[in-house]
Image (tube, rainbow, N blue to C red; front, side, top):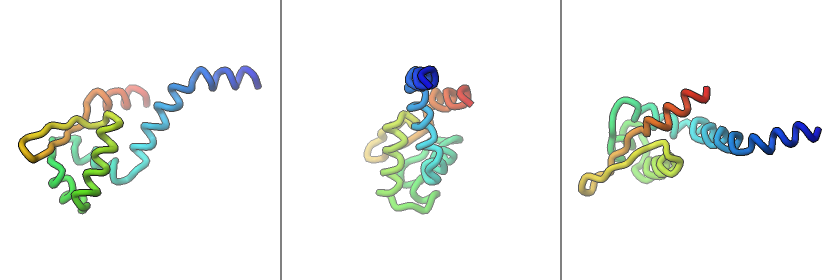
Length: 96
């Protein structure tokens, strides 16, 4: 029992990182956003339109992905564009 407890304590950082990955991928809307952005950069309004969401709902999900470092963002005037963070996707693929 003590050995199992120590192993779990040593793996706590990995467990936390894995849980955050599944938190993102386990949400259908966020997963759909990642798939939509897999091939090209899109603005918030385009993502909302493609996924049939309100702009505020799309913005909320985009912020969650951005805060977890899954997305990159750029401003072009009043427009905000998002794209997938390739290093995060590569990290995910290596961990599988």
